[in-house]
Length: 118
Image 1 (cartoon, rainbow, N blue to C red):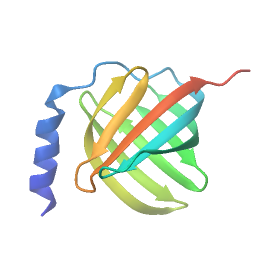
Image 2: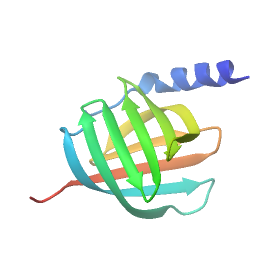
Image 3: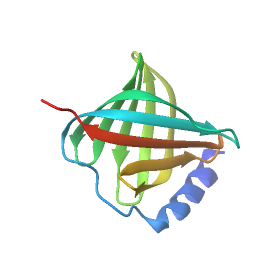
């Protein structure tokens, strides 16, 4: 049942986010994913901050749609027009990087942004 898990995530989110999202615009990203106790696998990503609360992170033909709220993050993972995953998680900004976890899949994510040069 998803409702108890969602309630757990919302309780964990009480710690809150410690910083605001970056300004709207295009960024070069470094996206790292670690499953279980394995080392993180990192690679480049194209990032578009649509507003201070919404981001689009593209890695090849996979797009993460991120919506940041005061203490939680909604993640919708798309392949073309098909949604392939979605979850809600607490998040934090640490050293300029967005960090969040999918607790059910034991997966950690970190997104670092660098403004694109004109």
